[in-house]
Length: 133
Ligand code: CMP
Image (cartoon, rainbow, N blue to C red; front, side):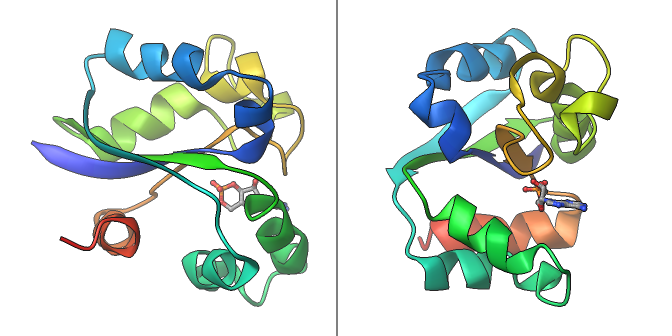
């Protein structure tokens, strides 16, 4: 079994999509093994997205992720990292396949409703960032 980190981002939380999105994971046979609702400080978002620090969108991205509560979850399933990326869809909701979370709920490339780890290495880092024990 593999684990991945999922975040329901502020745009989805403020539209009360938390249960709808969690149900997509459950329907797709993910087990939600840990979850925490948190409101990040900007410095936490900067650390979390450090991999993007040289990108032109980094500052806006960190302001956005720290703009409201988020729901952070550890999802477990065979091939959880790839499977989660499949059901999230492309980063830009306009390019995401029909039926994916970002196509259904995303507003823009910034407000794309969910984050999911993109590799085993980042999944391990991201999970320990939010869940210390
Ligand atoms: P996420 O999967 O959380 O990882 C980094 C985020 O940066 C990404 O989702 C997008 O919401 C955001 N982002 C903003 N602009 C871009 C861009 N041009 N390319 C990729 N990601 C972007």
